[in-house]
Every structure is written in C-alpha cells, then in structure tokens.
Amino acid sequence: AQRVTQPEKLLSVFKGAPVELKCNYSYSGSPELFWYVQYSRQRLQLLLRHISRESIKGFTADLNKGETSFHLKKPFAQEEDSAMYYCALSPLSGGSNYKLTFGKGTLLTVNP
Amino acid sequence: DGGITQSPKYLFRKEGQNVTLSCEQNLNHDAMYWYRQDPGQGLRLIYYSHIVNDFQKGDIAEGYSVSREKKESFPLTVTSAQKNPTAFYLCASSKYRETGELFFGEGSRLTVL
Image (tube, rainbow over all chains, first blue to last red; front, top):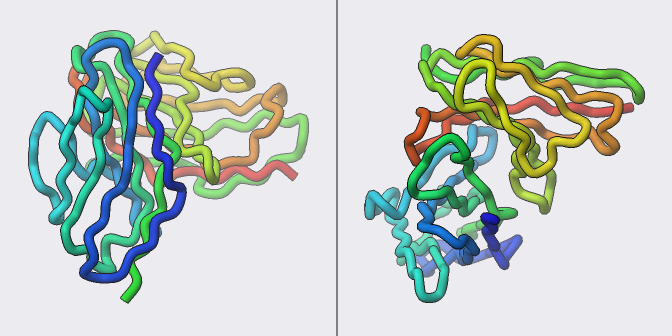
C-alpha cells in the first residue's frame, strides 16, 4: 500500500526565513515523489518531482530512501509562497495500476 | 485552450438524489482520475481510468460510480448511497504508463441539503 504523511497541517514563517515542509512515505517498491501546490483560487499544479532534480521557484526536495522522506525546502521564503502544499507518491514503474497518492497537505503562510 | 473542464462549479442536491459531475479534457491524455478534497483530509482517490472502457476503484469508491466511454470524458456520479457527499471534487488527467504530471480541473463543489 502507498501512504504519504505530512505531519504539519499548518506552517507559518516570516518573509526571508527558511522553510521546510515535511513529507514521509511508506511504499514497498520504488517510488516516485512529487510536490504539488495550490495557490489561492488556482488549480492544483505540480511544483516539482524528485526524478527531475530541479529547483522550482527556489524550492528543492531530496529523496532520502533511508529515512523515507521527501522534505520540501526553500532558504528564503517569500509572501507569494503562501499556499497549500501536497506531497504525493506513485510507483516508479507506472503501468495499469498507476495512481498518485497524496498526503493531507500543509498550509504554508509567509508573513511580511 | 487546452486543459480540463469540470462542470458545474457549484451544485446543490437534496438527500436521496443522484448527481453527475462532468469532466472533459482535450489534452489527449489516456488516464483520468477523480479525487475528493476535504479539509484536513487532503486528496483521496475515488476512481481512475487508464484507457477507454476500463476503470478501477480508488481508496474511497463506495457510493460513487463512473464511466469511460470516450477518451475525453470521465463523468462521476455521486449516488444516494454515498453517506457524506458534501465535498470538493477534483478531476485530473495524465499520460498513460508514465509516472508524470497530473493536470487538474478547477473542481466542483457539491453541497447536499
């Protein structure tokens, strides 16, 4: 079974401070991990995926298989980063049973 | 304008009535998904379909039904058997057999009176 845990429902930081949104997962096979973001009044959209190893809008996330974690980090938070963030997991191999399992989300608020 | 269109955006229903939510995509994606979004619960998968005329139950399929007669369309019916139907429903699509990006619609909010 696939499971994603985001331990923080709410996270509040000040502008310019570092931010880390935690994500832990449980999956017996090889996973692919994602972060999705939902800004106010916008559609849920992909922020980044571990395979691409990109930095998007200053955010990075490293897959730690030993700790089964995929924490999202940004060194200097901006007010426009305020949004709901979801961590998600899928089987790496794809196939007919491919599906994306989401965590419960973390609402990030960046205060001025 | 490519994307996913969900309708209606807002829907009210009386208890005991079935209601169907529409989801259409013109991205030429093979796979489509329905999620339910509740405060504090995140997104939970209701049904998904990877090809036409085939679909699988997700984690919370009870009280819901779907059909996939066309590649572009994946309607969701919320039946009277769904005990707690008031929620925000999201439809998404993706390429088949690729671990990749899901594209989401704007959602439909269903309220049962």
